[in-house]
Image 1 (tube, rainbow, N blue to C red):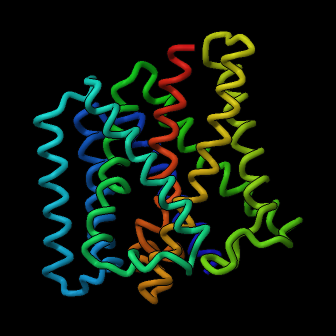
Image 2 (image 1 turned 135 degrees about the horizontal axis):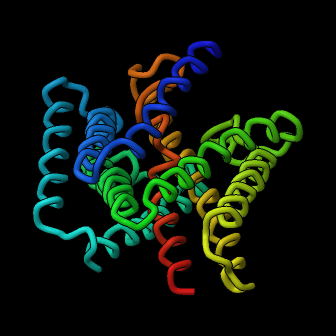
Image 3 (image 1 turned 180 degrees about the horizontal axis):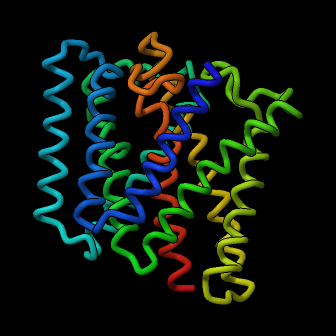
Length: 275
């Protein structure tokens, strides 16, 4: 299993970086859209739609929704930005749901509600990635985002193994520890400091404060994304969102943290642009 995970990761990471660096804007929209459409196909199962036609139908409906957004909303408009940032309100609700689980989370057993919340999870992910691709130095921004999420995974793994005695949310994901959260956060803050020091304009104290604070927030909310998907899978009685990726489960199992982290990273860059 560990070898499968390693081999799959060796394929997925370069594939994502190739999409970031080699694809033009429209090509990247399609690339990110395909990831989200596959995620929607898996999400149908989380929502209780197990029939192949229903799962394919939800994937097709998602594709039409992304196409409509592409056609009718300009990526450089305030509307696009506000729609991405509005997803943060949902992730706050998700954090509360994870904290309260299994109390006061009966609404998560509703199939229609789970279909609706796919919008702030997956559609906002696509819109956030496309927004970052439209910015100056887009390759740097998208790589930065990926390194934050990947760095958090690595830091959490080693810190959790070394110091992980206190469980983070045992009712939702018994393997997660507070030490892992702190290790992932420290690793990702280091990533942001290095990138800012090497590639970004010189910041004053205020700029560095927001950089570090929002980098920590990106990782904190990415943990919520991971836990929230675990919560949905636990309610559904499944271990993985699918078996598309050997050793890793499904697409959602790989992008759950990214779904939550992307809107917060958009906020980070938006704030840094005005401080």
